[in-house]
Image (cartoon, rainbow, N blue to C red; front, side):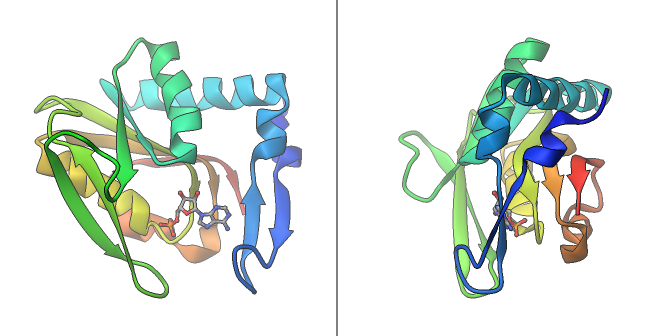
Length: 172
Ligand code: AMP
C-alpha cells in the first residue's frame, strides 16, 4: 500500500518567513485513512525501537505522539515551550537560525530508566529533537529512538541526534 500522506503534504512558500518552504500537514489530518496509516507506521517504528514511553514535542508532535502511545498501550509525555508547565521541570535552551528557543519537561514525565521514544511531525535542523533528548536524559530516561512524519534531509538534522536511531516516513 502506498504511503497516503506523501501526496497530502502541502508546500507553503515563504512561511513563516521568506525563503522557508513550510510543510503543512493539515491535509493529512483531514484524511482519515492517511492520518491513521501514518500513525500506524510511526507506531510500528516505536515498537521496533522497544519504546516504553512516547514523548511528543509541542505542538504537532502531540498530534502524532498521543495516538501512537494509545496504539501501543504506552504512557505519553510532553516537551513544552517555556512557561507552559505547572510542576517541577527541567529546561533546555538551544540555538535557532536567529536567536534561541527553550523547551521544558516535567521532572516526573518519564520514569528513570524508561526507554523513551521522541515523536514530532518534522525533523529540520534537529535542534528541537536534540533538546528533547537532553531533557529526557536530564530526568533519567533513556532515549531509544526518534520518529518523524517528515525529514528535510538537506538540513542534516540527523547529525544533531546521531547517537539515536531516527526514522521518518517522508524524506525531502
Ligand atoms: P528543527 O529544530 O530545526 O529540527 O525544527 C523542527 C521543528 O520546527 C518541528 O517541530 C517542526 O514542526 C518545525 N519546522 C521546522 N521547519 C519546518 C518546515 N519547513 N515546515 C514545517 N515545520 C517546520
